[in-house]
Amino acid sequence: MVLSPCPGGSGTNTLTYLLSWYTVEVLVPDMAVQPIGTWPCSRSHARCRCCGSRAVVVLSIGARPFTQFSRPLLEAYAGRARADLHVVDSLEHVSLRAYRARLEHTLRFLKLPLIEHYLRRYNRVLYLDDDVLVGPRTPDLFAAIPCERLGVVVERHKPQSWHAMHWRVACGLYGVDSCAPNAWSLFNSGLMLLSQSTHAPLVAGWTRWQLTCRVLCDQLFFNAAAARARTCIADLGSNFNYVGSELRRALVRAGDGRPAAADAARRRAALRDACVLHLTRKVPKLYTADWVVHRALARRDVLQCARNATASAGGDGDVSAASVADAKLLSQLPTLAGKYDIGTELCAEVMKASSGAPGSCVLQPWVNGSIT
Image 1: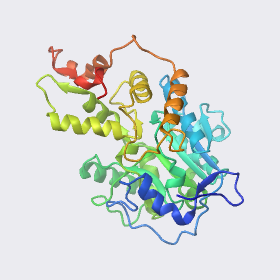
Image 2: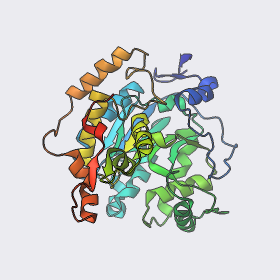
Image 3: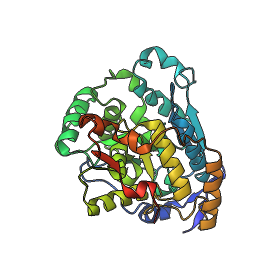
Image 4: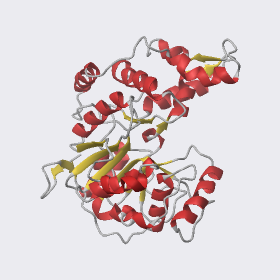
């Protein structure tokens, strides 16, 4: 691959525009350029600026103890991607202050003025929810995703009936013409890579809409906005939004042995290959974050982004550099070892449903054993 400096940029190196499609295939082999199940995208967008300033932006309001584990990963990733990191943790932030009265009771919509603010200041913005764990081998998405495409993860693990139900609501709330709820799929709004020249219109004028949560909140808004604009989508694939419910299925099994060995092996591999973990409500976020981050850096058998990874955490192909980087990051992290048992935490709901029957939920053997 050939790297070239961005002409007129801030010194950030990125892949040349002509190689960007090739790079997508190398770094993100399971990424669909325009995923099946979304609208035909417009080809009328002017060629956007693929180089220039980059920002990783995170919204983190209130008591969020798990961020002591997610934030160091974000700092490391932003450093590798040569991007500025902005963690907004106050309603008095310049991007939010004017909208505090309107949005303080619906915090999920705060990402609208937040993203609008940073798209005015940076050529490209990677927005991430604060309960996202970015694995140590996650590739540079700024370089991998062409700037005219919105980099997101389509929620393919959900049935089409789920997508159709929410699309009907989104189209009704946010004025989507020619809505096709039975054919379209929603993308998750917890990870979005946007470009100033192409995607600023998605959030421009957001104040004119009556913002409403119908189970989903900002996710409906962003999907509707992208559909109205016929925005071209780059689906990163499920490895970039590995969800908490899948983590639980990978780590624990029922007392009767379910899932079967082959299915258990597939789930273990999926957790190893995941690049980004989204700590959904299906898992206890603090303890899960502690376990996953330490496991990823020490044993390296989870969140290794195996199908999509850069060769090392340093991005230079030297595996030893990854070891050094992992050890350094590990030394900076707090640890909750001895304060919880991951099996007990993950099995709590299962045990409650089964009235605490012994053996109704147990850890998979590999979780506490060797990584081999």
